[in-house]
Structure formats: C-alpha cells, structure tokens
Length: 347
Ligand SMILES: O=CC(=O)O
Image 1 (cartoon, rainbow, N blue to C red):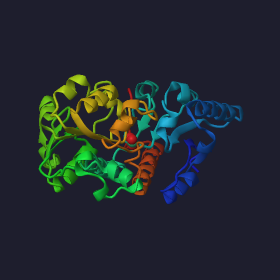
Image 2: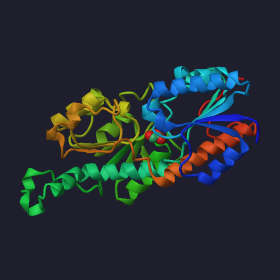
Image 3: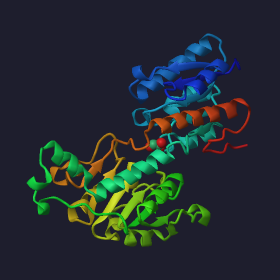
Image 4: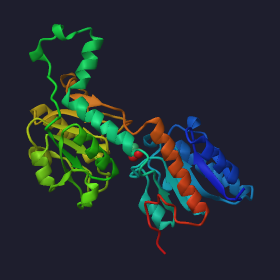
C-alpha cells in the first residue's frame, strides 16, 4: 500500500486486472454510483466522506476518479469537488474524451490536474460517425419504422418516402481533425468520399489521411455531408448557426457525434424545415437529455437518426478508457506529470 488515498465515483467494469492492482497498491474508497443519482447527491456524498476522513484523523484523498454517465453528474466544479480540492486532492480523472463537463480553470487555479481518456473512444466514435453518415444519407430510420409497421417495399410507393443516397463521390466536410476526425477520414475515404476539413490549425500533411484543409466558409459551401468532430469550447458553441446554415448546400446532411451545443439546435430545426438540411444523424443534443421538439415532430420521422450520446460506448472503448485513467493515476502516484493531463499547472 502506498498509504495514499484515492476516492472514486463508481468503479471499473472492464479493465479488472489493472483495477485490482490499483486497489492493492493504494487505499481506494468507492462512492456507489447506483445510490447517487445526480450532481447534488454526489456533491453531498463527497463533502460527507471528506469530513468523516478528517474527523478520523486519516490522510486526505490525493486523487479522485469518476467512471461513466457524465451528463447526470456534471458539472465537476467547485461545488462538487471543493471539499476534496481544499483538502489536497491534486488529481481528478474523468472517463471520456471531452472535458467540457469539468471546470478546468478552477482545477488549474487550485493546482490540480485534470485527466481525460483522449484516444480511448477514437475508434468507436469514428465508427459511430460513419454509422450516422450512412444512416442520414440512407434515411435508415425509415427502414426500421417501416419494418415495424409491416410495410414491405411494395407496400410503400417509392415517391412517398425519401430514397437513400450513396455516399460514394460525395464530399464530406469534417469540422475538427483531431483523433476522431482523422479516424473518420480514413473510413470515409474507404467509402469513396472526398474529404475536406476545417481545423483551427492545419494538421501535418502526414496526418491528414487524404483530407484537404479548407477555410470554414469553403467547407460550408462545398460539403454534401458535414460531420462535427471538434471539442466544445466557448469558441465552438453554436459554431453552426443560422448564418452558417445559409452558406451550406441545399440538401446537405449533418452529423454530430461531438457535443450538442456546437450546433444551434433551433437553427438546425429551421434548416430542416426549410429543406436546406436534408437529413441528420445526431448522437448529441444541445440540452441533453432533452431533445428540441422540432426534431421529434412526426414530420421529421424519416429525416432524423438519433443515438442517445452513445456512439463512443463500446466494450473495447470503455476498457481502454479505464486503462487510460489508471495510467494517469500511476504517473501521478510516481511523482510524474500524468500523461493524459489536459491542463498545465502554474509553477
Ligand atoms: O462523449 C463522450 C466523450 O467525450 O468521451
């Protein structure tokens, strides 16, 4: 035992060997996720366990790790983490590639690292994005609904339902060529798409995977399919709004597997209603778990393809994510900068 204590919200489910090793090496206390349904209950549980530990004269927790189900618990901010941080917790690790759910500025000011699991969900999310590109272009939701209604192809006149489109030869515009965008480019290329991308900075040619760097306006004007793959930041909130939709091709397909607020959902609904946007594939929504009523309207049934923020969730991805959490913890416990820290601490 290292004699250093770690608090976790939930526990590992997939990388069990590594988890058991962590539990043998350090003192690990687990807050039971099943009994803690939301932010407030977790905040209260943290405050109680930290106070109880201090009252018992035990050394404070140096690290906090949370597993799974981010939207229920966020934000991971001072309100929730304050008692831990004030008592010397210097590492917070959260499962997931995106870290908009954590107050990074607060943690940095307090001298605490925040670590994500940056590449664990790359393959699953890129595959999920391709799945939604195919679902949107092929109007996949109608197949499911017609099958359930017992309507076979002969029962549905061809001109009453949208016909699918083949993506071969279409131009895919990827917004954000990070690891997921790059993995998507490889997959879309294999399907015969031409790939253009917009990123804050052009990425090294060797990493473009056949995608061509263009300006944002050029991407909007040229893409037949737009896939959102950038992080949510103050700059990317409502990155696609009324002005951007007006610059797109009529009949464009939109796919979002990144974060809901990057698209102004009201503007998206209007663009669907006007026919500017043909169909969408959405894994993320602006106000999760709520969905804009315009997207749920029966008139949109065949034009929307939904996933409940789960394209990143595969068994392999979760196993890798847990391993990445443990790698950061191990670095930290060995006095090194955690390898997946997203922030740099002031000296
Ligand atoms: O949305 C999922 C993630 O950020 O990992």
